Image 1: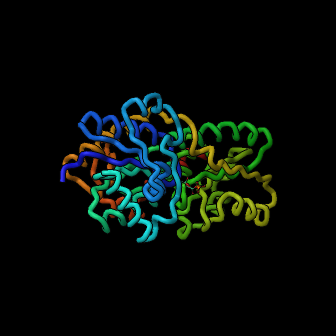
Image 2: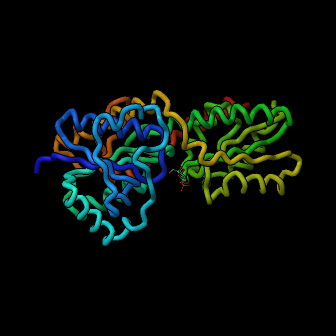
Length: 325
Ligand code: F6P
């Protein structure tokens, strides 16, 4: 069946660059003669029927904005078969032939399930600050979040060094260390403590024994949020007990990392990926995520994108160690 109308939604945690992606999908679709419907609040809009038509002027003046103009949500109803049935019926009623979904792991897992149950072409775009989707070098929002963290750590460094303190700065990542590791490198931090290596080594003990205060009177450690490591709070508690000589403080950056105007890099990948999503759908591709590897657009099966195998570059950790002596 020829695709005449596509639906677009953003779901899960918002990420800077989502608007640039919505704009690119909308304009490429209209350029290709399709009608575009914006589904509000992620999969919830498919259940409640909150759907608007998107014309080219509706996405004007949005490329530079953080957040998502279509709003977002984590929809519990869509996790059940009954909920997805309602979503399918809404699509039929609205005449939506295919979907472009923008989001992270949960969003793309939902898309995979939905596409498997009903005969709907779906293309996903990786929109998450966590960068934890397999098959793409970067996700939309990751670069902006890295820059936000770097700016915050630059400021924390002023007070850390004035007081000779050890700071644990917790960043997001949902059990994934991309943000912590690469922002540590970008901000010249002394270490990164990330969930990926938690079973291999006691990262805190290693950092204190090898690095802390060799040549410095203050230190900044980037910590990925994680139930396994206990995050920044958990590590600070350990330091207070095991190494009471250190004056330790904690900063949890929280949702500040998800906001703000997207960087040029995020706007560019969002625009390229958004265009590629429509080209792929018109080309008969379905149940894939658009990725970028080595600067080139790639088409990743949804099952591969969400399989949690994306691995960190170990060499980056070694670089960080060398540069923080
Ligand atoms: O998926 C992005 C993310 O920022 C994660 O890193 C974090 O765990 C989560 O969202 C927090 O989201 P919320 O507070 O919106 O539920």
